[in-house]
Length: 309
Image (cartoon, rainbow, N blue to C red):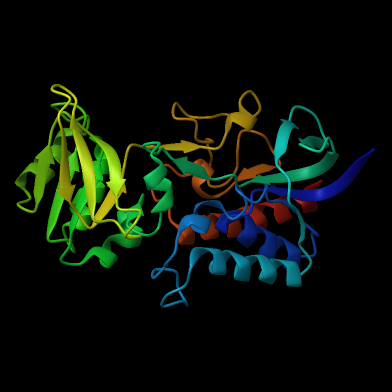
């Protein structure tokens, strides 16, 4: 037995919740399969303070997600707290299956499953996420005014983060496991010219201190050539080793780029009636507000599509 819907939204972050609001107000009665508690809400659930979302001078990530969810629900969006485990976009209506074994049929889909920041894999990293550890300088740089921070990584993203941080921080150390960068030449030139940036080569972060003090005060750095471990006083750490879009579910169903992001024309995917919004199709901006914007666009396109079928 399966449920039949006009529109299903996969993912409950800013993109999915904005799409839910717009489509609910258009009387499309969307079903949002938001993911289990660890996935629902997306990366904002790990963000303690947001100061760049219009209308809020400061708001916690979980609080913003709750407000967006309640707003969509007020206008008639329905929510299922499950993970989708398989999709079939090859034939219509589209079929989605969840972990509980339930099957859903739908005329249209908005994919807003987001992306994950690749992390170092340290327990302390998880403990301090949003409290001294960040993956977004654009979001959090202002909290480190006149402080010393570390950026981990050697690609364009790491150098972009470092350069953004120099507008606020007193000193930015770029820690890279190799003795040369992967970043483009133009980004390297900018970073090398910036007097606030210092490079620490052939080094990895072993641990972030200090759990007992309940704040980031230092890092343990390991020289990959000698194995020597040193401790460095620091106020914050930005992990910039890349992102992975949550698109494993859509391999063979939608066209993906070489990094796994869904290829889109605006918000339209390679399958008519399937739209993508937010970080799952955005390797560039990765902001809550841009995700919300594409969520709006996806809902408007889904409404237009449903009028034609």
